[in-house]
Image 1 (cartoon, rainbow, N blue to C red):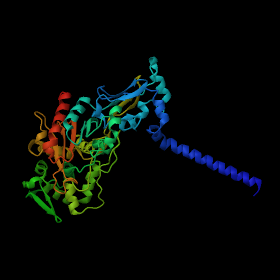
Image 2 (image 1 turned 180 degrees about the vertical axis):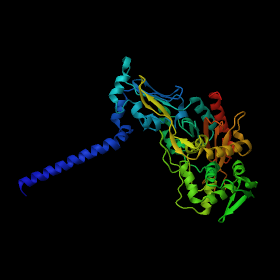
Image 3 (image 1 turned 45 degrees about the vertical axis):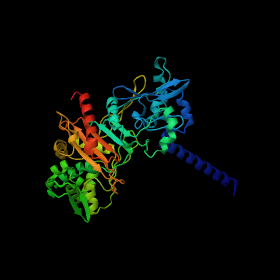
Image 4 (image 1 turned 45 degrees about the horizontal axis):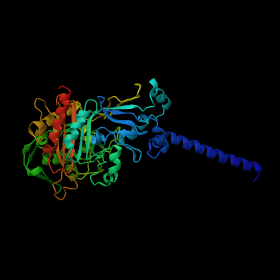
Length: 474
């Protein structure tokens, strides 16, 4: 090989290496940078953050939910309300890293985002030390406190939303944990080893069979597919393709139409309706309300699922009563409820309302926006009227409010612990108020309670709706 050829080959190798380097740097900039910057293992970032007072996190009214202070020359993150926001704000630990909002919005809170120079300038106005931006959430502290007290002795979750805007007003998952560093350090091993999974944000990542709350989706599908006039004589049970479907307690309700069947939550009626709707229409209804779809949100979410590729008649009947393979998060059920309340439109769920520098410059602001058009206003109104009947004279009587019309649906969902007759069903309730002009929607689930949704969850929803209506002067 001549010297010239060797030089040319060497140049080609150098050019190739240079090209690969440019390719890697481009990939890093677009796909890896944010992950590295927010990684709890990034010690350089941790060192830089030590020189910046981390921003506050506040509720919608300015109540401080997380703050930082310098103690003994070391910055410490303080959560004034202990475990109350642990599944929303998360934790900020030098040992265990960051989670949830503390992790997702770290670049703003720690003054380490792309416009770092601008942040430094605004933070030092008036001789202030460098400080991270402050975050304002959509949550209401008083309502959050109320929700936590109502769920304190239960496992499960509650989500309260404004159906008109998608704003999360309260969101509680139980059990929870105290994110303050001293408590977190002392109990870390116990927490990660606990069978109760206290680190699991059940409201956003817990997946449950929806049980009879899903009958509102089935009712909407019946209305949209000319099956709403179906009548049936309920004898307490029905056998579909060799499988028996029974009402709770084996009750027989006699002659039923769709409205009365929803009010009494007849499994006999809705399993038959599910079979009559068939695979394509069941799947279409589930997807229209957001199952199998990603939801843009400020916290990590589990995706609610309708995993069927094909369905037997018993599969269709099971889905008709909210059983089978379908799984939903409490947030998903709150969104479904809000969609019915909001004339068929499901709004994008909002948690972080605004991010501002200490000098008042707005870096991020979220505004309400439509996510899905699930059903028509006419169908939504018809389902709403049937849900009013559930509360006025059906299984949801415990959600009724004096002087305010409430729409709701109870649910009792079988799970892996009830197949052997152990009586550990999940209890559900979804609802909204006032029914004629909804401003609040609620979803409540209590895990393995062995009680009905009407007995256990409806009173919780009632108290939360009442508290919010009272706070709004309604």
